[in-house]
Each structure stands twice: as C-alpha cells, then as structure tokens.
Amino acid sequence: MFVSQHAVSEKPIASSAKPWINAADLSATRRYAALAFLLVAYFCYAWSWNTVDILRPYIKDSLHLTLTQSGSLYSLQAIGAIAGAVVMGQIADKIGRRNALSISMLGYGSGILAALLVHDYTQLIFQRIYLGFFMGSMFPIAVGIYSGLFARDVRGLIAGIVLGTYNVAVAVLGFMSAAVFRAGYDWTVLLYIGVVPVAMALFAPLAIPDDRILIPMDGIADGQTVAKARLPIAELFAPGVARQTILLATMTGLNFFAYQAFTGWATTYLKTVRLIPDTVIGDVLGWQFIGAAIGGLGWGWISDRLGRRAAAWGFVAAAAIIPIYLFVPMGVRLLELTGFVYGVMLSCSAIWGPWLSELYPPHLRSTAASIFNWGRVISMTAPLITAPLAEAVGLAPVMCLASVSFVAAAVIWLSLPETLKRA
Image 1 (tube, rainbow, N blue to C red):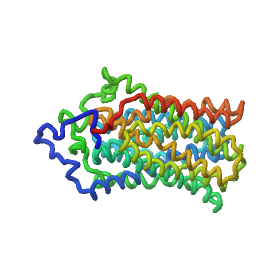
Image 2: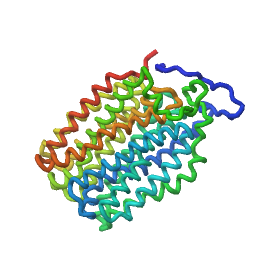
Image 3: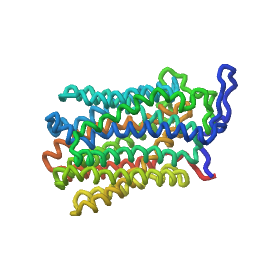
Image 4: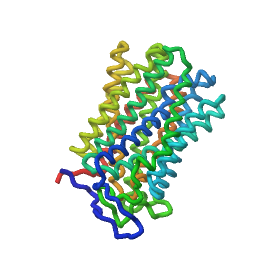
C-alpha cells in the first residue's frame, strides 16, 4: 500500500450551490466509458502530432523544402504547443477540463485538416503553430480528467494505457503510411483523421463527468475543484516548489530534445543512410511505437508499486540502445527488434502525467501537468541545432546526442520527490 506525500481533505467544504459528485460513487462502467472517449481523442491527437515526424520527408518533397526548413516544422509546432499548454492548462483548471477538452479537439482537428490547404512554407508555419497550440493542451487536460476519476495506486497503469494509445496511434500512422505508398495513394489521405475529433468534440459533455463538481479520488484541498487564482501557473512558482518546477521543466525538455534528436530524424535516417525503401520505413518505425505502447503499461505498473522515480532507469537503457541502432550493421528485422526494445524503454515517461499532478494541489492538476510541454522550449531547438550539424557530420553521430539528453533527464528525475511511498 502506498500513501501520498500530499494529504488532502476527503470531502469538500460544504456548498449548497454545487451538487457534488464523488468519483468513488461513479460506477466502473461510467469511469471507463469516459476513459475510452478520452483515449479516442488522444489517438487522433497523437496521429496529428506525429505527422511532423513520420511524414516529414514527404512534406519536404511536396513543398520543396530544405532540410533545415523541414526540421523547423517541429520547432514551429512546439512553439504552439508551449503556448497551448500554458494557456489551455490554466483555462482547463478554471473552466473545467471537460469543457477545455471540447475546445482542444475542435482546434487540433481543424488544424490537421488545414494541412490539406497548405501550398508553401509560409502557410505551413501558421498551420503548424495553430495545430501545435491545441495539441499542446491535450496532455494536461487528459491528466486532469483521469487523475480525478481514478485512485492514485492505479494512475500509473492508467497513464500507461494513455501513453500506449499515443504510441499505438503513431505505430498505426507508420504502418498506414507504408500501406498508402504500396497502394499507390497520395500520403495526404492520412490527414483526414481530423474529421474524427471535430465530430467527437460535440459529445464530450455526454461522455466525461463534469470535473467542476467532481470530488476526485484523492479528495480536494480547501474546497477547491477548480483554480481560483487569476493565474494558476503562479502557484507553481510559490516558495518551496519553484526549484522543483524548474527542474521538472528542464527534465521534460531534455526528454523532448532527445526524442527529436533521435526519433525526429529516424524516418530521414532510414531513408537516406540505411537506404530502406518507402514501402518499409513505416513498418520499421511502427515496431518502435508498438514497443512504446507495451512499455507504457509495464512502466505504469512498476510505478504504481515501486514509485514514480523507479521508471527513470528506462531512460538510461534507452540511451544505451541508441548507438547500437545507429552504428551496428543489421537487417530490417533486427532494426525492427532494436527499435521495439528502444520503444519499451522510452515509454518510461508514461508516468509523468500522474506524477506531475501529484506533486501539486489537486485544483492545479492540468496546470501542473502542462509542465510536460514546457520542456518544448528546449526541445524546439533540437531540429535547428541538429539539422546543420547533420549536414556537416552526418545524421548518425548527431542523433547520438539523444543518449546524452536521456541520461541527464534520468539524473534529474531521480533527484526529485517521490509521491508514492510504502506505508
């Protein structure tokens, strides 16, 4: 059994104006139905986000972009995501995560569909920033919703399921891109996924309980289910937690930098260095994300039993696998297997959602979880740094910067507080 570092009241301060709903009183069917709706929205978000990586070489060719311009797409998307995480994370804590979810789904759904209308780099800049803004809010909103619906000792597993859905979406995008080329279709058909979240957004109020009147499994502090401060983000820099907040943002930044330095260039590396045909590249990448989907469940289970910091060793293992993937001669099947194992280790960050929300008061669940995307301030520089270096010394040596970043992130992770302790 685990106990929380931050004990909070099990019941709210009495209020006749609010018909309180206790999450513990909701049926399992009701809570898991809400989770299922959230997972479909998350699948579409993950698909949309990763078009910037999986489809990068094809976007580059269709719009006649340079390597640096194509690399900048992630940075542009990250700029939008940082703004979206900060703005929408706070809005979600003030107007309710369910309401913010509808806004985000409409935003990123329309954003990915807008890519069909892009004809030059200037238009692409605006499309990726707009898309990034609404996608950047999905993680903190999702964490805010499922952290209220499920108990602390199963949140790691729930987080693993959510991350697993993300990685399944990326794997499906990879497999589908290969299938689209084999079938002779244009890659732009993969952008029509945006229709799904736009249509679903209208049904969020029916599928998700109203978190503004929901007593979460942990209870609530000072009678607050939503943030009352004008700028909830300011509470994350209050005395006693400011250093923790800065370290968390640095840690997530190193993770995103590593991800972009390796996975962001994986499609280009496989195509130009390993000379793997377009009809196979999607399959190779797909297995990496299948591994990540499975690994998220494993790391979630581990974190619910050994604590949130135990998963940091996954980053150390991922750092060791990267040079093997890049420099050891191997066929397609071995590349798929190595990528699969790397994916399993990479997914250790699955538990960051509940961990971030547990490090701060419950009414700041989404604002705290938005720290996850603050790290993109660091990571959005990755393509701009790695692209010129890759042109000078080659992709493989530059992609090894990911190993350094993963190890540094693991060191910070292990130095931060644990939120689950054995009684």
